[in-house]
Image (cartoon, rainbow, N blue to C red; front, side, top):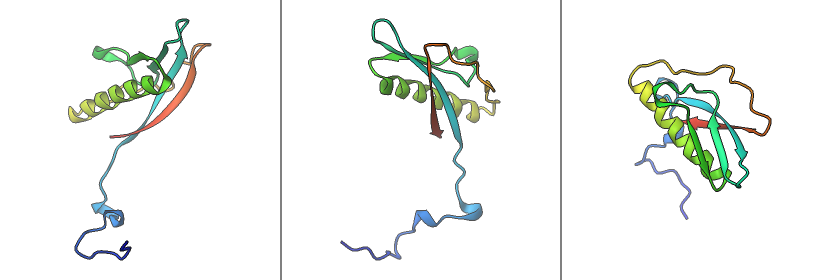
Length: 109
């Protein structure tokens, strides 16, 4: 295996200064709980729903639910940024209900 640098290919890890791309990053706060039937339910707590409504999902596992809500979170934030609209953060979010657990998922667009 050749571990020597290849001068024919730029090394993207060395991008610095003004040429460094700006990647927006956000925290997606999700409250999750398991329903009486064993279904996992999650809702985004720090982003107002607006016309699209609150971001919610249910599924067979917490991983499945987090995947669903974070995809929707990312799509909604991306659309707002593209349209030049302000992101309707809820800061601080309402506290979780007694049966909910808090998950913070870092999101990069």
